[in-house]
Image 1: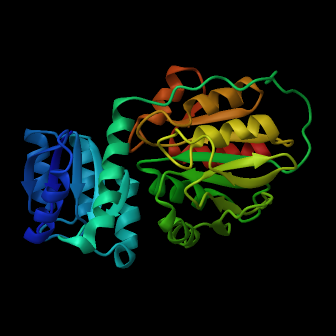
Image 2 (image 1 turned 180 degrees about the vertical axis):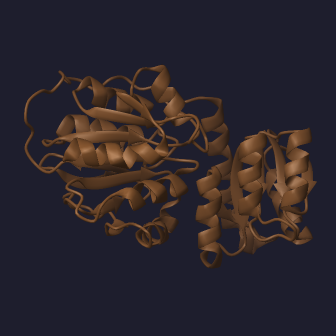
Length: 335
């Protein structure tokens, strides 16, 4: 992959270059010391991937992500030395289209684990940009009709650009919303609890990480929170599963949507928001084929029009809606 590095700290740049040197398939095409320079360099030579720091002079990483994803979009991985103190900046940048976040590796033995984490995320992004997961339609699956037992479930999938889209959608739901909400957002599991807390600061509904054995409840938002796939099991309970193993994103939106088709006994609604790649498109199609209302975010309101586009191309969405109309549509459908 052709990679650009955006960081104002020479030691951090040196550590990133040393880490990338371990993978012959990766090459550094340019460096930028701040967001302003990064925007300019991207316009002149857009790389396959940007390694973007968050705190820099002149323009911070979150604003640089916003401008780059508007003008010359590309895959962006946030790389910063202090994730915990900059969580708001992390979610802001991911809301603008950054795909993931990882710690800046240190030079020497102490940074070996961070180097491995960095290279794993880069390789995952490279795989995701190059191709999607191909899956077969689940067995059974005759379209469902008639009344369904249990409280309605709103199942939402999101990736790059998802945090801000989720914050906007949840903020529009009423405090007396009659549906339950379960979300699979592509984010490292170590940040899931922080993301749930961040979403809860503006959502009228309580937001927390989903636990093994939880049963989705009306008026509550559950967020997938481990490195395993979130699934609906018989009895409308939630569980985490390590299988299937060969999915590049864990948790997978496709796995979650397909488990709803297989096991959810109530009414359900599938929503696929902004994101790079194709995860969720086939699962959303399976939900539509089984009689569930399915919604995909439109091109204009998506930070990254990848997953919703994939859903549109295979006819997975019953409705294509701008972000601001999705929550009102769900309220209307569940009323």
